[in-house]
Amino acid sequence: MISDKMAAAINTQVNREMYSAYLYLAMSAYSESIDLPGFANWFRIQYQEEMVHAFGLYDYLISRDYTPVLLAIEQPPKAFGTPLEIFKAALEHEKKVTAWINELVTMAVAEQDYAAQSFLQWYVKEQVEEEATAKLIIQELKMAGNDGSTLFMINRELGARVFTAPVVGQ
Ligand code: OFO
Picture 1 (cartoon, rainbow, N blue to C red):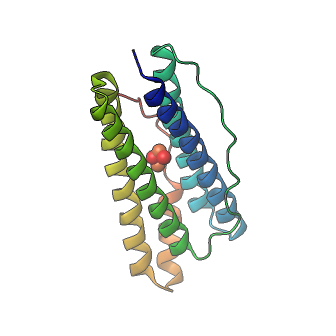
Picture 2: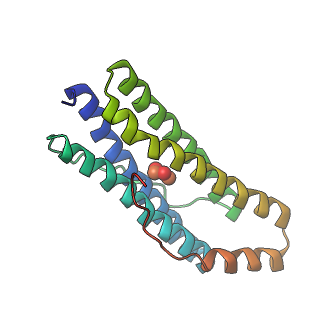
């Protein structure tokens, strides 16, 4: 049995993951507007990943006999500044998500909900990866500085990303 409190907290996280998806789609649209199609591709795939994160939580609630309640998704910003600033905003967002996941784990431990603790471990690991990836791209962008040809290379590298659907729990 999942407690109402734990279920409601996971339900809120479904909304936050959907907001993450929305935020990355906004970053993708913005990247298109500043002529960085590779960045746009990378963020569009990130949008897809976040939807997988959301559905992982959604399906978990269903498996625990809780009907997910779809909450309103906040409107993300429209503009994100320089290429470096976009990724800095992405990293800051991921740090927030990490804190939320950690809060869920803390709640699961307090409630002695071993199933939720085990399920949430995948998200804990995923956050380590998500933060590391954003940091790496930030480093590359810092090294590029104002060098247009390096930015061109990074744009091409980000454009090569392909979507491989993560499997929540594996
Ligand atoms: Fe970006 O990991 Fe989910 O939100």
